Image (tube, rainbow, N blue to C red; front, side, top):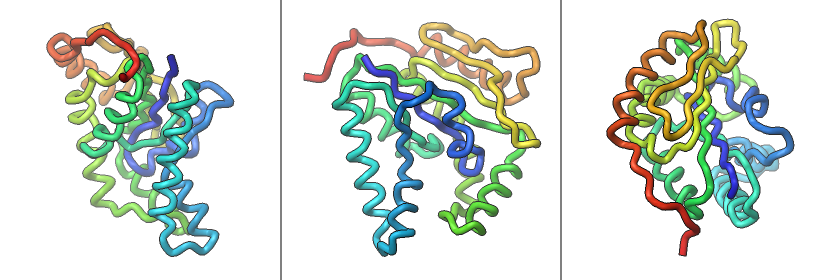
Length: 208
């Protein structure tokens, strides 16, 4: 059984910069945007399409290998959870561990995204950041049954990330640190209600 880590959070939150600090060392991290950027710098005009194809191939190889690996995925759109469900369905014995980056200050995400684009990396429009930021918890609540473990990472105004709480199935509440931010406390209340009603697991086994 493999553990698939999903490094998640709105654009500009610091997933690419700090995500590796919150997962085990020496496992592959697949990021479609970073793969696409490599092809962009090589001069390919269709770098996005090539990057997405290479990303899909890399994830497929990791799934076939049966080894632990990580995917960087915003989880701010329904399509992201559709993809996560597809990854999960490859082998129901695999576990999904979401490492969720979030912050009280969306301005932090907006400024980081602006600086990233200025440095020549991909552009994420402010409206998209606002949309993903606002939808993060609603989508997580709706798809909690896909998740086996959740680690909450708060990104403070200084930009320093730290683990402020966590959850694992079949618990009905988060384990929060005393200094957990308001967003984590609110998420805890939401998940308590959802987990009692929604988490109904089927027997696990490999896909036939």
